[in-house]
Image 1: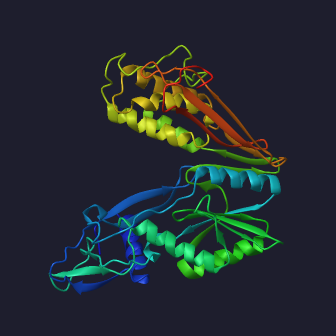
Image 2: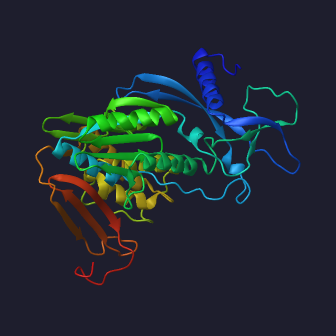
Image 3: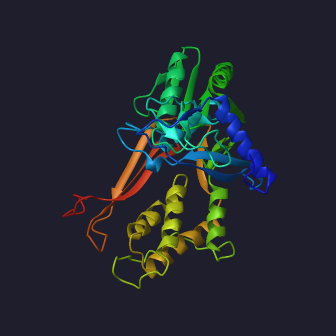
Length: 395
């Protein structure tokens, strides 16, 4: 098989096909009468390390799930993923109690899910069939299928429950095991798994079990999880998105911009109809989408991002300038983030407040809250209320 003139991508595709064959993802059959095969395509991505250097070239064979028919090719599709608040709580506990923090990645995770439906797929580009009517009958789930994530999560859940872990009812992606003498927790985000707890032997045991069942990549100590950079020391754990911030600034051409002291000008009052329509709405939406994910570790920009994100459907020039103001603020402090101290009482506390009728378009109020676990900030939000309040007390 050769689809590219570049050896790195050919090798990546061969590695993907090898993984598909190893898991018996499909068998070649003649297409039955009345059946319609779905298509597939190659997706290429360069994986980078936290320092920006190239880690590896990755080729993924993806099914064109958008051509699947509900009730025929798939039924249920929902699959839970880890809540970011749960991730922050585990980091706060690990810092305060001195727990081990490990990370692993499941190789070709979706290929381990078993299919309950009868799904046929055209042969991957680059492979030739023995007969013109030959197709792939999928035995396992494949990336791109609507039910793929659900089938993988179900398979992983079954494996962890058989190992003695209990699934949390508050976050279905959290699994815990408490034996009295040790405590271990696993947090699952699709194929990325965070392990923490008191017993390193139990962590290594579950790693070996998962490797035997699914084949994993042991990433050892937690350093980089979902684009979040984790640094651990004797004083505690720091969580930030420095590389992500610099990538945003680079894409926007603002690496050399003059920093701003605050994320938003206090005198600025945004409105839906005061200004000139911005010429590139798609660019504005890309910036806002990136800023929303950045609020995962940056509560200092939450209010400003909430304000500008109201206008993604019809951005004006003033809205774009407000978004650029946030980027200029980030230019001055790209490495800011959250700190989870090792000396922590872990006593929960919460604070909430609101303004009154600040939105000039709807006259609705904005609520803000933050929740601490001791001295560690674990959750916050800035959100416009659903109804109009008639007084500041009601707001």
